[in-house]
Length: 414
Image: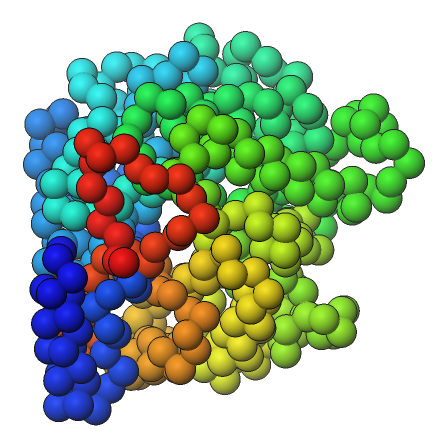
């Protein structure tokens, strides 16, 4: 979009704001993302769909995203130590071809990136680093699955299979899997969600006695686990930038780092945070500039007893103030709209956007998930396009990154 067109678009957006008396975003430099989950065929592709049907369905999703004036899609491409792309390290995902290891007959990731870029949408490749399976049901593992090749790296916890982050070989394997994609595909960003060590379940401890005994080096187990994830995040960022210095790296963590009930530096909340439950010290990653953006999942309503949206928003705003090279995007729970309680109020999510507009540190939002916007519960899609996303917008620029090759003009606001 030319500078003059952006100026005109901004003027139109501000006119709409005045007319409807809401916080319409300026057209230049706001991140408008949406998650597209593939695990268990959540949003795409339909289970058992042919390659041509999968392609048509994805094109439809991109058209829907563009029609809502979004500017980025966050697509899950490695949900369970598998691949939606041609890989030397991971088997084809069962969610793309029905059986793990079966070639779908086309390269889904190459197709998806191309279709997103055609419509001016950034493509953020979403990886689940350490999850291997969603359940312990009997299944046929592909011959090149980590379960077959390196069973010593895999543990069972909470009815699922996981890679043990305490093993240096595991962390290297995951980093190599990520860099394989960065090297071979024209993605705009590498993206993680909130899963590092798994959420605690059943009062049982994650089974890492052997790796802790081997590599703990006298640290407490909690500190050791955090150091494993810290090292992993730092290494991913360095590896991505060494391969392509213009590719972004972002994480969307649990919306609570720590609560004040356990740490005076924590948020005004009482809920458990990622620091203690997932061993993810997100505040450190922001302070050290190990991520280009942080997108906390603030999936609670305004005034929620243990994790009020407004308090958590202020906490994350204050966190990024000292880190100008880390953008703050807010993860929004579109999937909850129309559910019981506060989410039956059609103004709940719009009020989130209005409140965040008061903070210049908030540079955009990501919605979970695309079906929840398309389905338009309580007219949320209409509210977005009529009151907030009234004009096209480029994603906010990250001047600390390298310049993207001229062969692809990134959808970035100046």
